Length: 198
Ligand SMILES: [Zn+2]
Image 1 (cartoon, rainbow, N blue to C red):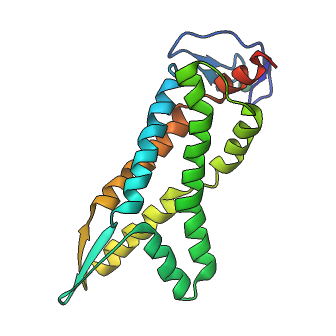
Image 2: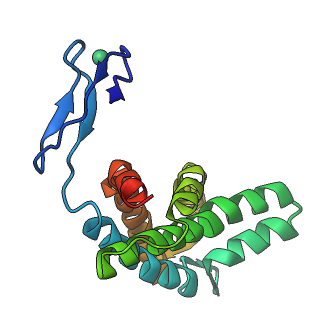
């Protein structure tokens, strides 16, 4: 059974075809939908995300040219700079939301999806890992860092020549891949797998 999120009416769950969605018979709001490929698609995005994560952390994000001097910074350097400037809480927040949590999310998804996609088997401790993933999911905020990059570009644009680097493109790609992986992952499918031979 599933309860409508808006009006609490109970419905029994039926199997849908790909692309179909189930709506509440009373208020018409979406109950659930069959996204299709809900293991392989997020898995492909997780792999791309992991590669882009490496690139985003390896290549400089921006380089600045201010009267002759040329500086370029990798992602983690921004965190160190904030820390050294005494903005320790912000440095920790930026580190958690734009480096640690996004990486942890990708690793957890990889652990969940790789055995399901490749070996058609569920990994040990799937229920626990999936619950950790759902908790962590709302704490990865790559957009926080994205926003700070945009602010930096617009503020420094007047006094320095700002050049976009490989790392920034990788970072934007990472943002899209992580967002896509969460969006295409159907939690219902994972819960069904957990129930399967429980
Ligand atoms: Zn309803």
